[in-house]
Amino acid sequence: MLAKRIIPCLDVKDGKVVKGVQFRNHEIMGDIVPLAQRYAQEGADELVFYDITASSDQRVVDKSWVSRVAEVIDIPFCVAGGIKTLEDANRTLQHGADKVSINSPALADPSLVTRLADKFGVQCIVVGIDSYFDVKTGQYHVKQFTGDEARTLTTQWQTLDWVKEVQERGAGEIVLNVMNQDGVRQGYDLEQLSLVRSAANVPLIASGGAGTMQHFADAFKISDVDGALAASVFHKSIIDIQELKQFLRQQEVAIRL
Amino acid sequence: MNLIIDTGCANLSSVKFALERLGAKVIVSADKQQILSADKVFLPGVGTASEAMNNLRQRGLIEVVKAVESPLLGICLGMQMLCEYSIEGGAKVAEKPVPCLGLIPGTVAPLTPQVSQRLPHMGWNQVKASAGNPLFKGIEEQHYFYFVHSYALAVGESTIAECDYGQHFSAAVNYKNFYGVQFHPERSGQAGAKLLQNFLDL
Image (cartoon, rainbow over all chains, first blue to last red; front, side, top):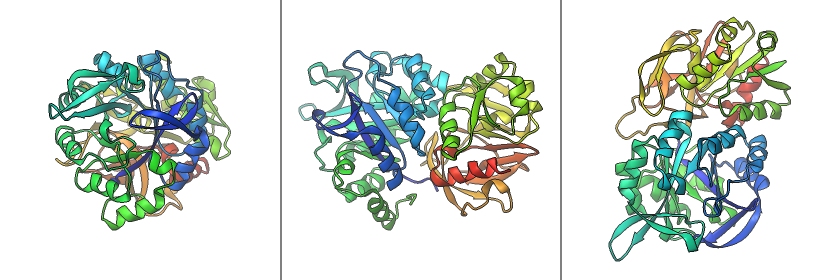
């Protein structure tokens, strides 16, 4: 049976792993390679690296660390941040990344998703979506350039419409970052995840809000997501990956131990 | 000498790194003589079957791969390329089947998952190997391997391991000196490393 995935996310800034609260106030958590290695050994099913400043600073993510990670890691990993062209994606994959994730550049030019899927296959094209719940309108909106608060835009896209659009264009996986929940450890936004789940027929990864082991179980059991991504609970050793996996298995979630 | 065929497809390096972690020496090459004289040959691949076959053709490697007499391991798309045809053509199903290498019987077709299952089939799934094939020696039953694909080869005479995702499909095949795995051993933790070591030991 296909196992649900536990995915530590490492936000990368200037070659270091950082973590902010609600996308701001980044504090340095450590070097990339030893942290990646630690998670792989602890039983992570996959890793995601986001260069959180790349898109907003108009620069391409520095790829040298991708090779360094690929040399030591024997689980899959995805690289996000600043991938704007086929050449950017190609270089990242050549360095040993298994998947590339695009976010702001897809919003700027949705045809990028199609071109990437045609060139590399849908299986390695992930689309990250930063979704924000607007209390006034009661709607979920997609945000762009979330790496830099001053440049963050609310796009014309409502989240569900964008999910359908990128899927139609060849996204092989969707990571839904719920911005209201990010870094505050109050649980994943199950309502929104369930909504997106019903619209998505590609794998869906929950992101933003994990604080307890039960939050993971809820995302899998209530919203039926394929993977759950989290950062601070793992970086700060609030949750141990092995313990989490044992817990989920006891709750009858399909898990690779 | 171990050799990874330089198909121009992305992701050659992760296979190379995995072999180097095992202490194996490996070169990446598109040179005909080197490919034909290698002790073990790897044919990795990510991307689409049509793109990957085009790359092989442009490099004049189609007949070279067919002529390999040493054990050859196709990984993921590399396994699919060993088959007769694939109907993968990018984001959409190809209009007509893409002719592949024809070294393993069968046509690669889209997976047809059940309603609650997503495509691509992405993540760690259990593999049931048939007894006795040296590729899975020492790997426990129903071990997890990492998959990421939307197309697969149905179970057939060359199948040496199966996986179940809405339907049973070939997780690994072997016909003569040609081996293929649909999953990514280079990304499948210790079990993947064991499988690669088993292949090196053939």
